Image 1 (cartoon, one colour):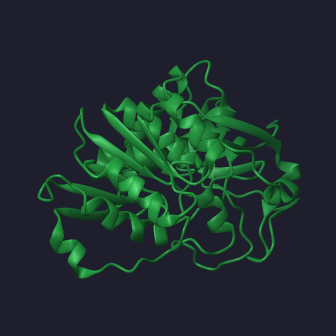
Image 2 (image 1 turned 30 degrees about the vertical axis):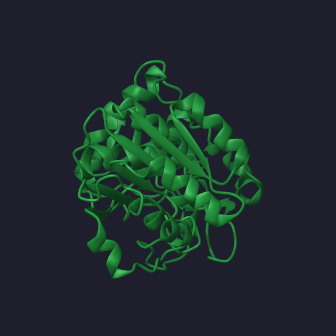
Length: 321
């Protein structure tokens, strides 16, 4: 078969011949149809993801849409121990797979499930979020942040504050459910003062940035909260701006702040998979939308390093026989 193959963490994957994986116990063979190029996939391919074990060569891809031997088309999340999904064939654990509803577009599903899953699982599994609450999406201009705005509104948030730096992408978020949009570009003192004014009293922060933006956002919000004893759940999901922050101890004493992460490990695989059918339903209904750009898997090396269009997610496609 052919696959996207990573032989060095310093280079993008190349389209090469690779041995067809043999399904072991509890696995089924699957012919791939579509697999999304998510940030999680990129970090796995360059060896920087926290689950990376450093082994090469590897096939990237953490999820996708494929066809089972009986003809059923499914979306599935790959197990860490199984080959990646950016290949003509791979294997899957049927416990991590859900059928695509009739009429569902495989490319859209492959593009949207992973970025939507981060906020969907966070709000349904990591905290008890009640309709009528308010949410700040920090890093809302990425694909996952864009989906988080939609997910928050769908799950009943009365206010969704979307914050980010990209003006083109920020402009789109009002039409997707954001009630307030805050630019973090320009003078940083002014930017985070705007953020504090808009989001001081939110109930939840979904944080895709970490690093310097989080360091600035914390005091901007906490010093302006009307009631500092009101709980604030800060859910760390991504680290687009850096893997670490400096956290003054006074921040933890000065407000009712609860930090947590949401991702592999903090939520069980079973818990994540349990959320897939309901999320799939909303994507199929069009409640949540994504802009997918299909690219033949044979073009993986070129597409991997090409500039991405705002709001679009690349999806590598194959033609299963």
